[in-house]
Image (cartoon, rainbow, N blue to C red):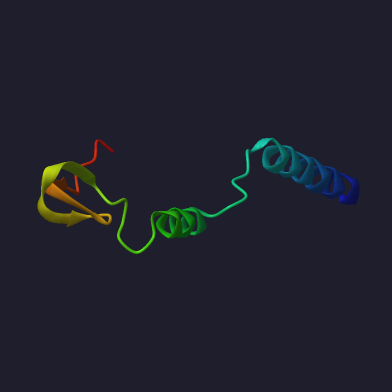
Length: 73
């Protein structure tokens, strides 16, 4: 009886080990990746798109219009 219990425990550990070894790992949590992305954009987001010449300030330039908040994601 003890041998069967040891065998079942060993097989269970072997299966669990194979499962965890074969499962791909994401080394960096998604929250960390989002923080890195936010730091890359700076304080003002991605800056949007700047068009034309005019009286609207956009990333240090004066433009006619600035379009922000549009994404295909």
